[in-house]
Every structure is written in structure tokens, then in C-alpha cells.
Length: 227
Image (cartoon, rainbow, N blue to C red; front, side, top):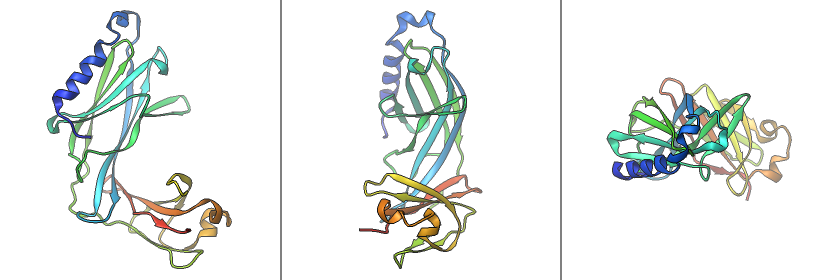
């Protein structure tokens, strides 16, 4: 969502002042690391793709995760920002690490601005921490997406010029029910799934490939495998 920088600053100021009275008794949150990735999704029409941003922060708050209030992601020079809260962020635990962020952040344009972004993490006491990261993936007029061909009930042909490929099985609602690491070539869906139960659980497929050189993920358009 693209908004004016003034709107971002107003939202940030309101969040900072929400619990200012209790700030002295609280510990400021910390951003330990940032994991960001540019993802290109294949779509119909011109230019045939849309770019989105996936970003997660490894965070720590001595007052507990319930003390976190908002995470802002800002590209100041382009007047672009997103605000994440408990209502729309993804929160996951990996061992003793806590990660907070979101997948597929859209800007309203086909191409995301490159350059420096800033994460601002704010807790309920109004205390905050900031850390920058850079989106350095090259701008491309076109992407070379992998292809999926499903010509027979149990047959799938994958063509991909990338080393890292993951096949996503989706249910009728578009939810992921299974992922499988795979490669170019002819496959049976039974082998990819592990048995024939995909016939009852999966309705569509999409392939994710990672372009190591460009540091960009690529999602093909979905294909239906069952009515």
C-alpha cells in the first residue's frame, strides 16, 4: 500500500505517544536481524509479473512478545510504507528465536523501489528501535519464470532454469497443503506427493524457484489439477 510520508509520520507519532507515561518502566524492543526477499509473481497481462516484498525481523523484547505494538516498514525516498500489527503480522518461533513480519507486501505498482528500507519496531510503552536493510535485487523488465505442464491426470512436466525449486500443492481455497522440493523433468504427482492422496486434497499447483544470482524468488501462476 502506497501512502504519503506524512501519513506514515503521523501514524508513527500516534503509536509512539500511546503509552508514553509508562515508558520509563519498560525495556525497549530489539531487532537482532532482518531477513528480506523480493518475490516476483507471474500474472496475466503486461508486464506479466508483480513484485512483492517479504520481510521478517528477528526480535527480542524483555517484557515479552505481548508487549509489541507495531512494526513499520518504510522506504522514505519513495514515500512508501506498511504498518503491521498483531492483526496482520506473522509471528513465528524458531527454536529460541522470534520472527515478526509478513509475506507478499504489495506497493500498488508492478515494480518495487530498490534501495534502503527501514524497520521500526515499537512496543506498548512507546519505546522503539530501528534498523535498515537494502533491497538490492536488479530491476528486470521481464522475468524468466519456470513452467508447469499438467497434460495427464498423474503427469507433471517441470521446466526450470534454477537450482532451487519447490512445488506447492494448494487446496480449493488456495491454502498450502503440501510442499515438495523438486527439479526440472517429468514427474508423477503420486511420487511428488508420496502417494495418491493428492487426488483428495489438492486442487492446484504453483512452483517457487529462487534465482540465487538475482536474490529473487519466482512464483509461477497456478495451474489446476482437479476440478
